[in-house]
Length: 332
Image (cartoon, rainbow, N blue to C red; front, side, top):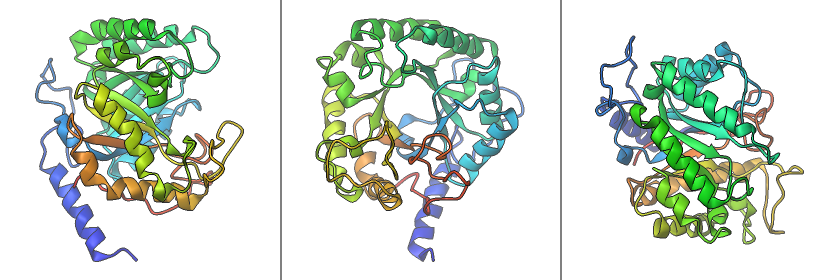
């Protein structure tokens, strides 16, 4: 049973967004044709409204069909009151990002796009970068749904590029996309910066700070409902070094199962569905705290949409069933 207070809180949250005449506020509907606002000055919602739950990470390694993208983006938007989808992984099929743009436009979703480096230490990311940038320039709707381009995932932690070269790539991307008014960031752990001496040159270059918040892997992890101090530890580091920039938790969650690539660093860390659920409840309970963070508050994504995309992290299991009730606040 859903209590009346919970329903009232959700209705209040939705009402606060539907009153906004900006993209991608809840209730806002994209027009049939692209707006005549080349600088996007009145298109995007103010970052200060983008705190609390904002959407899902969504892995695209399966190269979903255009129809599947439309259907799942519709679910992401209208079932869960998402404003964004954050891409994860890579699909190298020709025209795939145009399919993403179409599905996002159809469903009033913004996109955190991604230049995926992968884990092989090769330079395939360069072609992916160029392909994405070409789509952003050629597709007239792309700049109206692409909120930010991320370099990732965890290029510092994975030692893909030295931090000075990564900062250079960010600055080159910002120059390339300046006419489209699309900002650029890096999708990274706090530790990824810290193990590179802070990589302040990267923090200075990026337009927003897109944080991997994965407290399950802390050496001090136990249960999800005890993880707020671990979240704060990383968040405070970014507050101290981020020069007041807008922040998002993008790769953000707690696994329900372990796997060869998902192993705890604490013997007390518990992975099960209850703890996955409790982690999101914890973030929801701290909505007011996240709202107060410098830069316009912290918006958070749930990582990830389905266990078919990454085992243990999905809101849906591999059979397409919700693993637990999921209706976090989108404002407070």
